[in-house]
Image (cartoon, rainbow, N blue to C red; front, top):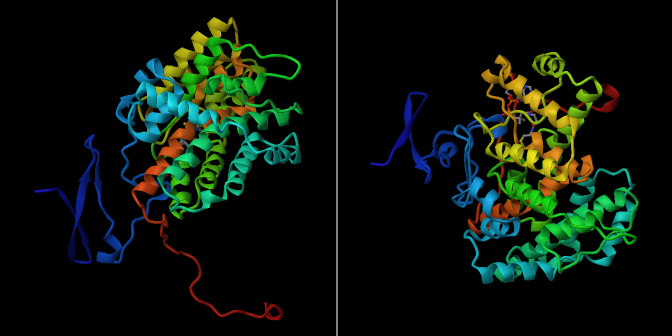
Length: 428
Ligand code: CMC
């Protein structure tokens, strides 16, 4: 007999079905709870709420497991490449050689963005944070491809929209950087691979060719793989929620970019470097900062530490820490903040406060040090996270659509004033 959960309310017993995933995760299915009992559940921050069933990414925070479509992240980071991982996430299986070639060729057909969109960039101030620019321009794609507004336009056309977005997003991102430094934008070069093309648009200049360094290309490719999906995190849930109203893909992803921007989510990678720089400028001793992070009266947190789901270690951070050493060694860069980061990790991991709360370095702790070694400026770090997360967002949006999930609409417990009569302004 299948397992059920019993709920007692006001002397009545209600039976709720239990569902189990392929990795033995269990959930009490409360789809009919309100209809049966009149009650709702309350779960601030959705700490215990499964918003969907998904077959894209499996994550076990207790044992530090992360798998895309069943493939361990360690194997993908070591042996795959970003474009193949994008295909895997979106279409569910590793591609054959021909499928991958077609996928890559199709992306290349759409890397340019409309010339009228180029003019948007000059309307943004150069000091604009690139995440705001990327979100705006991504959303604006929906006005250049109005057919994307029709959620029932058929699989071939929806596939074209997904391909367009994968193709144009690196261009949109790199142009946000070029605009921020007042340089002319660099057009995509389709003879280059996905990651090479992005780096070229970031660093090439009309006056000077950019020489692609395979160490940098490989490191960025690996970082993008590690960021490519992470099941129902804040930005992905935002993409699915926006998409559940049948909002088009471009605007749903723009919403995801905005959610990613916050310092508790993707914005942490920029904050980590700013924190490490501050510690360096302050003399390099980490003890004071660890104490500040523990002080309840101080809003300071150790950025790049802690995770809602990982309570043992973040498998992505493990891979990135090693990559960080490799990249800096191979590029011959000595960055004093790497030593500070290692010291901080060492002290925090032996401190009772961090042990008790299961706070470990997360994906953002070391990634910024690699980005910096590649010459990527701080306020582009979160944009890089978005470039990596894009295939995951697209896969999740598409799964939500194919599952025909209902519009996302949480409820609430109202605790405001009871009904009262309107008072004319003269009488207040
Ligand atoms: N430094 C100091 N204390 C912390 C930290 C930190 N980085 N993170 C959590 N805590 C404490 C927190 O004060 C609380 O203590 P207490 O129980 O005494 O009130 C306890 O640990 C639990 O924290 P929480 O905020 O309730 O945990 P959460 O699951 O809601 O938040 C988090 C997770 C990632 C937002 C949080 O750990 C954090 O703010 N970390 C720093 C920002 C960061 O690095 N974010 C990137 C996350 S990984 C990239 C991504 O996928 O988004």
